[in-house]
Length: 329
Image (cartoon, rainbow, N blue to C red; front, side):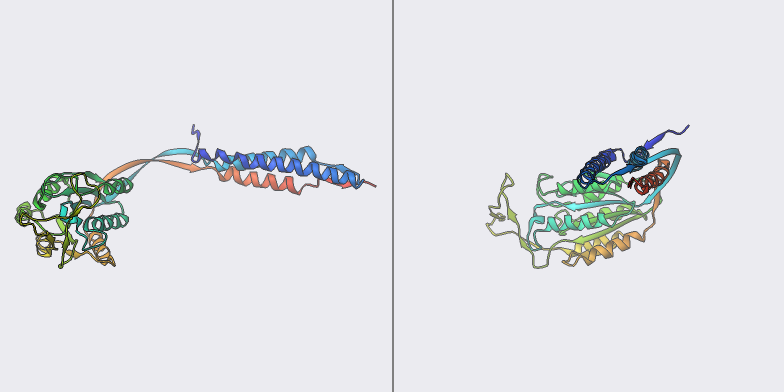
């Protein structure tokens, strides 16, 4: 036997509507009675009890239909198809440079959010990196969760200076499911200032035909000064200086990023104000080979609201159309 369940139980709050309607009907009825008495018009009441019963029953059925009554009819398997995507986010201090407004890291996060908005069933994970790297968020298809993790990424997540893309690439490669025959995607967002310049060699060593590496350059060739927020990460106190007392100028190194994309059988994109690189990247990713990675069992229901809504409206209309009274001589 299938029991009735309710899809929208919180709609019980709408019981206020029929109750308010009943109160208004009662007040209106009493007001009409007073007016007729003042005018000394005598009437014979008809169908009063029937009208009341039909109206109340009709409103009750309409309210019941708003709760979304449904009956369970079985389980169904739904296969999810998509790609596994690790986003490698440069969190070195140079990403605070303001040659791209408001700063490079903020632009990178905006790009990632736009990428998430264009995903359909793909799993995404985050690996922040500077001198080291770690998996901040494992692969997931919960995009709301991904936005929460993305929001807290900053340049204080990893202690130490420098930029080591190779470490992040190694971590991503080892975290993918090796049994999958689908393409595996790595997206690197960085200004390309790599202090340990062996990332291309590390990528070559993977010898993974399913791995596709896409890179997005964040910054400008002209470059910008690197803000100094002090050890407490509070207000900007000035700009970073090197050991000679000269201001540190950070510039986009697109060559490294282009080599990584070429070696990884992907593409290089330059960050822009228009965001054209996002559309090109998502189009390229959508053409890659996907795989079924998850089969969910979902409960199937038969909707029953129409069996209550229709009769409820009909009963209420009948109650409304029934003649209430007739004049007497």
